[in-house]
Length: 376
Image 1 (cartoon, rainbow, N blue to C red):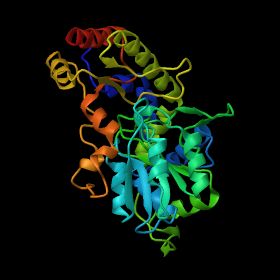
Image 2 (cartoon, rainbow, N blue to C red; image 1 turned 90 degrees about the horizontal axis):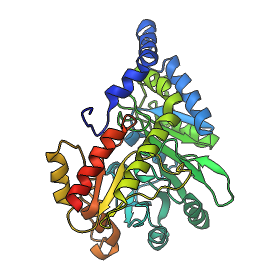
Image 3 (tube, rainbow, N blue to C red; image 1 turned 90 degrees about the vertical axis):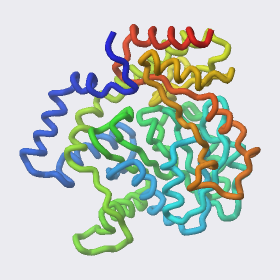
């Protein structure tokens, strides 16, 4: 059996080595390291794939979130609602911009932001909602947009973990997640479903004016060299990373399908144990692209299982061990423990198993057998 890894980027690279190397060599041959042709080509390719009018590449996913909020003109003191159960980058940028983070609980069934939590958190100071498509599963965008429209709020989709997932609206139409709200941010961190070999990110929107503003922000506020029209930052996707992403983008649907297939096998095997809550997978499975495969252990044995898997050479992780409302940087007297029952529960129950495009049946069987052995 191949050595188990949380993410197997080496094996993935071996299959697309020639395509990636050609792209990188083009950058080296032309010396177009910053804003080179491959950046524009990847941007156009991603716009076509997503069905988005505008993609603006940037340096990383955290920058993408910050720049999206800057582009919307949010001001210090404006309240931004987001999920308590997610990676810190989502709330980090809110705080950096001196906006007011408003953390709310999540749904126990899908681990995405609670609709009731959003409704309860809205005040006259609320200006935006940031739903996170956590672990690759699309949040309930119909309901979120309905709430936002009723209160004249912006929706900023944190799509760092769900690129390529489809969202089916109540009317039956389908859109790629990240193209439904006013603006979206994504990350191309190497372990993402579409990852480069360094840092990278992108913002996308269908709003022409917002796209124009954001293009200036990412480049020191310049639309014309040395003419600084808005306050900006220096956040660019370098050409080598754009080349890697351009080579990998045509494979994204295949990569996501491989993750979905692995998730089905995981859930089929693990679902027989009453103390394991495995992800529910719909027939089409297109609403979840499994950036992470996360199960819940409901009998208090999560930490023991973590140690057992590590002893057996199976990599695993806890996403996330501490709620954002309990983090020193984001603690606030506004938050009460009773406001976050689901998040607090998830932090004690969740464990992520290896999930990547190169998982094979032998590896999945070994992992699931080892989990079930401990949980019997």
